[in-house]
Image (cartoon, rainbow, N blue to C red):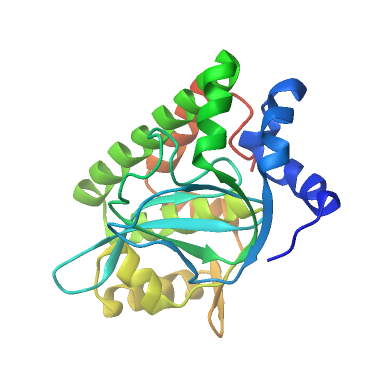
Length: 246
């Protein structure tokens, strides 16, 4: 962790949700922000833990909401990057987290006490409106994820997830093992291995130790279902300019 007003000012443009606030509204939050740097797999919240801090991923940082299964694996329900925030978006804090929230791709975050955000919502309708609209986008993403998991093939879902990750991070390389990807998608490792093998053979992906590298983004999108595009469209309708441009 590091504390520096200069670092905070450098990170602020790295989160699109915070960047959407007007100067006076952002000024209410600025004194309460802390700059953090967390590696991959850092757990921000465990299920049942009281939520007291809002985290804003910056730049390439990605955060996953993981729902535990009876087998003990964590299936991903949401992926959040620079377009958003996690923890205490709707509630007034001190309510238990339902899912595990963990850093998927390590990097920079800005942390804000939930009570500071709630106070800003009470003082500014613009702040309240922005976070209400973002909460709507999160719900839409959850609905679409549930439908996607039920209706689409493993290949489509794999391509969709990787496409979403590279768009949010702005990098064509995702630090993720095939085993981890299989767990998040709720499928067996052998299925993911076959899909990744197909992507490698047709030049869509390359694999380095612990990393997936996108070689042909358009081909990857062509293999994906339309769920990610539907979520992006909803973001564009409700919060235009907040979702990262590809």
